Length: 182
DNA sequence: AAACATTGCAACCGCCTCTTG
DNA sequence: ACAAGAGGCGGTTGCAATGTT
Image (cartoon, rainbow, N blue to C red; front, side, top):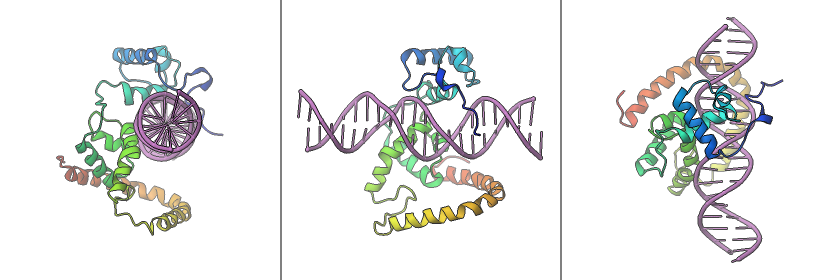
């Protein structure tokens, strides 16, 4: 048996947000601040799931959001950060003021991927594209990953500590790479 | 003008991590 | 130490807008 859902779907609105819903959410957060997302919908008079409210606020209603087209500088920074971090959209977003992880993720998938492919760069590993071997390499990686899965479970606990150490090292490396102070 | 294809992005889903009791 | 609940994240989907035939 899985976890219980975060909200009762039968009694919540889904899909696009209306102006009225946006206004309710904005005015509630302006008055009470960001708090318990689970109880917020009822308190704010919204028939929405808490997660949905959080997403709407973080990605579209927050007053500090930049919106509009990405600049060339932002493009290059995203590419650089993705090269260093991979699909860590929230970490990348943290380094782009006014941008959200969802926005960057969408922008990556719709624009930057194509841009890199146009330059002959593989968007996954940021290396040059080898048209002949790409498919074979991909297959090999999939097979390797699948057979490696079981062994990884056992190693997971052991690698967790290493991950944290690597993350902090990466943080230093990252700041140096994009020209920020440590 | 209509039908169809493609693109872009808002929103959802499910899993993982963190916090709390 | 453990379980449960809440928040956070990345992957994916659905659909409106736009472009093409």
